[in-house]
Image (cartoon, rainbow, N blue to C red; front, side, top):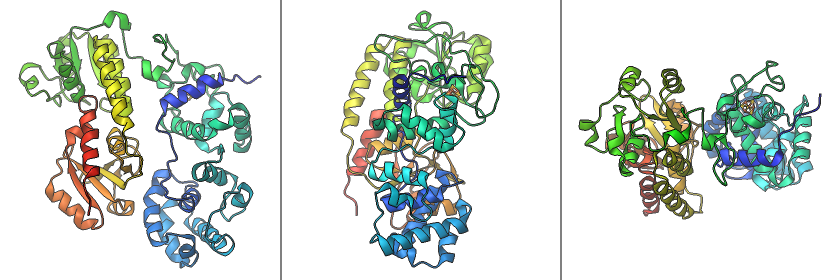
Length: 499
Ligand code: SF4
């Protein structure tokens, strides 16, 4: 059977829009650190490698020191990445060869690079692309799966899939495409449970549309792509325009809904900022701003477990959700009750512009939304260019929990010039994992956990080299209503003179 290949330009456009933050997930400061981290990432998650390498590079910062190390010390430091004896041997062999033959400098020549101990073709491609900006398209497990599901290749080995992709896509796109496909595999096109319903590529994907069997599982998937909501000049990105099958009945009949229930605290505040407070007929109990809303608008439970019967009793025209804040089950239950809902998705500061426009269209505040999106764009243009200190944002104590680099909170820090570190999403960290991150800056938002001066003092004692800052939790975490304030406050913090 012939391959069903999606239109290449459309595919590239949608991936670029869906994953503007796609980048190498392995923390590194130079080509040597990247090649070592890439070797350690075999059969191991990037998040785990990122927890391991700070201590390794603090002890052995260059090829010469690693080459001369006691192998037992190296093994102990990389043990948590698995297959540690082989990996320790590989990175030491690499360091010894670099020291003996290359003056301690990693070569950028593809053949020389691939000939080094522990560096196969795939590792060489990752390093060439990310350290030397040489177009390359290394195929890892995510790209292998996604490419085959999208009908971009029918090959059964990573090398042949790579060859198909390189033939299909222009050379200039290989580096960003590599990261975008990995992000897509991690966030949407999961190995066992691809979230086709939420996929921005669904209508281009022969697997999602059931035209071919899933090459990964051998089963047939099918999801109805439904009508596409497009306006003049808009792309067909379902995730931007209609993140999930959210709005029922159609958008046109929901213009300026008179009865709104908001289950997102910062959206409730945003609606009040847009002069829509009188339309809010219900809120989650965490919706506490503006202050008077607690006395005038009934609460309908929490964000994870709202009281569906109470919501139904309010007869809303629209319930507003956010995909991180509210579980999908809530949306499913609303659908079952026939209650229209809209779920926003905010993972980055730039997502706020999209969410404002999406919400503004639905609630009849397009002009306000556009003005705010334009102002935010201008604010973000002024982002500091210099890479700032490695910053860890903690959000909980007992256990320690962090906001990873792919979260909104970390992106606020990024827009202020900090380099967010740690595993993605909201991981719990053991003491050893926290120590291994070796942050240069620690940010302690005052919510959701009530971090205070005592916690800051505890962390200063633990990380005497790091700066520890208590920061306004609402400014940092209330996307949409306080986005600009969060970025400006952290920029002011970053600009303060540091010891
Ligand atoms: S539609 Fe489904 S199978 Fe196809 S790329 Fe999207 S998530 Fe993967």
